[in-house]
Image (cartoon, rainbow, N blue to C red):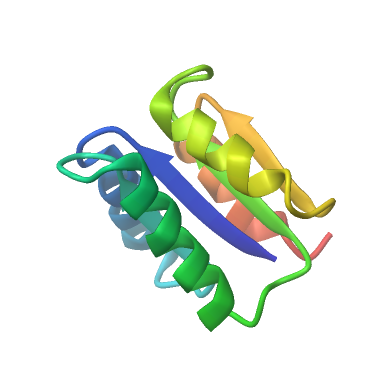
Length: 104
């Protein structure tokens, strides 16, 4: 299972870095920002990552604000696959749960 964090400004990277600092480096967790990038370019970057990951069967998109641009990008991408999910209100406990329980 792959986790993709999409947030405004540097929040996604900061959440990822903090989680890694506490739990150690993990695979299959990626951070994206919508800052200084068009929506189309953000979608393209995430689609490229998904292809490079071998088109995983399950992806969890974790976004900061429901209804915002990051959420809209995740919703658009999740509609293409039944195993893609969007969670809003991303926080450290959510990321910890993903990293420690993703095999369950």
